[in-house]
Amino acid sequence: MTKRIGALMLLLAVIPASAQAAWWNPFSWAAAKPSAVATTTPVVVSGISGSRIVPTIEELQSRIADLEAQLRAALSRADVAEASAAKAAAPAPQVKAPVSVPAAALSESGIDAKTKASVVLIESATSTAVGAVFDASGRILTDTRIWIKDQAGITPITVTLSSGAKKPARLIGIDETRGVAVVQIMPSGSYPYLKPVYESGLSAGDAAFVLGYGSSPIKSSVAKKTADGIELVAEGKPRDNGSVIVNDRGELVGIPTSSICRVLEQGTNCLKYTVAETAIQAVAPKIIAGMRLFIRKEYSSPTEQDIRGQLDGMYQGVKTSGVIEYAIAAATGPNSFDNFNNKLSNDEDGKMTKLYLQKLKQIAEAQASGADFLKNQTYNLRTFLIDHSADIATLGTYQQQIIKNVQSFNSAKLAEYTAKLDLLTKRKNEYDAYLAAGAGTTHDYLMEEGAFLEGVSEYFKADQKTLLDSFSGESVRIF
Image (tube, rainbow, N blue to C red):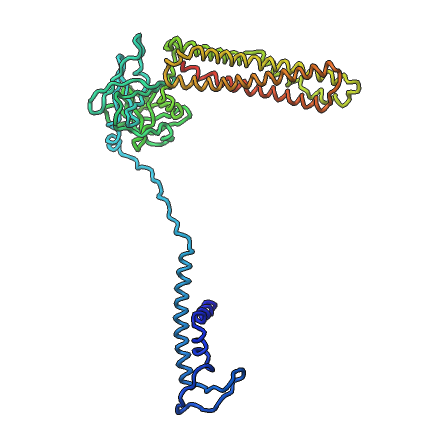
């Protein structure tokens, strides 16, 4: 009903005033000729000057019919306009993003067809290994058996492609502790490769395949997955020269580090094999970047040995230094400020204030010694790295980056310990001055200084752990 009234108002709005006067107002219509049924009696209408001839019923009905037709047309136009406006205001239909569907599992023949061109044989002077090309440039993930170091350096490496073509290669990175290496085909080019997902691509119970060079895939299943890697149970024996593990979509999971025969029945035949793969998800980018991590230190050059010795010395000094331990313990434990704080309220003769100041001075001296020790440690390391910069420039790219990180960290710590030493020295001198004057401190001041020195002890405790973490582990063993 509201829409119809609005349409009528719209109709009236668009009709000119002159038309309104002559169209819808019967009393403004011109006199009509008399008809047989028309009345000629003059009718005086209140408010209208003069008299008007009343129209016939037929004229009224005809004009009303015309008016209704105009109204229907206006209502129709109003409905169309309202529908258009509603359509324009309506929110656009939501288009759902296509759902990503994982690639379908492949059959044994499908795995063979997808992976065969990417599985290669790698040979050094004394050993062979199987590897998988994992990027188009020709980088290969393999195990460490291909790495042999002799007096001339690293033994030449040859890669045999699935086509039988042979290519020279070089070692890029190695993690002997995990048994994994990365080799680069020379020259780099465009090679078929397997997408690496590493051990994240499998879970317990999933199907997988063990691939050898020139042999059919061996179907297997994941028996166990831990933080250290996965174990597969295979129905056949992997090749002695190594193998590659892929998931059932033909994606690279890793390189087996061992295979163990599992005799499920009495007899000599091995019916199943347990194939173990070490987790390398986190370390793979480092190996690709050129990390060389060996088990035996005799493979290090004289420069590497010097650097490792310096970093080891930093670690041992921070770990065993009694100076740092005393700086940590001075303001904590049974000699903390809690006992003094409780006694300050009864300090009528000032003796407790003096004892408190003496304790503050003692702890500040111990902590200043700790800061001075750390300052000297970082200064000595800084000097060593500067003096050996020419030798460091001969190391591998990855080792140089690690040294750069160590230098940046060490420089920041040197500035930090220098500032800490200056601050603690000023505090000690301040306590000395109060002791010499014999007065001038408040109990609030003493308690605030006690809390400050307790915080310094917590700082040394946290920083000791930071230093031990920084100068140990992989960052030292790569040299």
